[in-house]
Image 1 (cartoon, rainbow, N blue to C red):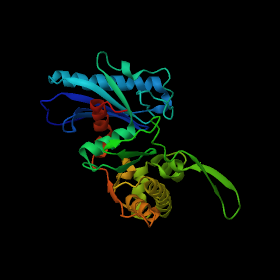
Image 2: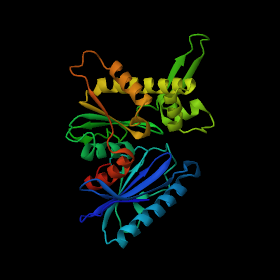
Image 3: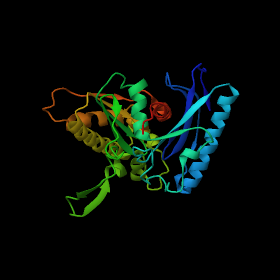
Length: 307
């Protein structure tokens, strides 16, 4: 748990539920400063009920800290790695089956706003990070999974049903040039953090960051896997940017903002995939908010009533 200086203004509790961890923090929604932060493992294999109870306990701990310091928590912003529609309802079950869960009952008498985690990350970068002052941008989070969010006219774009975040989960097919066998997979299964881990070791005994470090040190197998992942992700992002014409691409998430071989290869692949007739070369920058993006973005989404 970490602490920062306390503000005079009200704060919101920001929660980021991802595939690996549940992170939460007390956020000054005027400045984006995280005052107190804590996190716990998600453990999605245990089911939605356990995730909800863990989130509730984590929230109660942080709200108790706020109360002890005389700070008022105006509400809870909860970002989650699912599709969240315009009414703030979870409509996908990628992480767990939420049909019996009501996050609005998380803490008595404190309002809760739900938002898709990638839109929370995009909002954090837009208000406090790399996309400040930008009207049209593309934010892509590459971590356990891969998700994009368009920023149009200075706002994260949700799409018609809140589902404008699917880039890498659609099935794709490839045919081996040697044997002719056709394989069905998805970009996320190869290029995400979990994809890199499974490709390197089906038992996932090495983290994506550890594999990136091995690649950087010259491990040939790790380098090939990381290079392939970055090339494919960059190609997809480049094609998406051709369709949306952003002035800036912000790369977030644990992998997207990681310096070194992956980011260099990813950035080069994005540039190669860009249509040569585009009037300007798009700026590509790593996210500035780091690990706090989901927390800050979720709290800010509560303040702006963004789903």
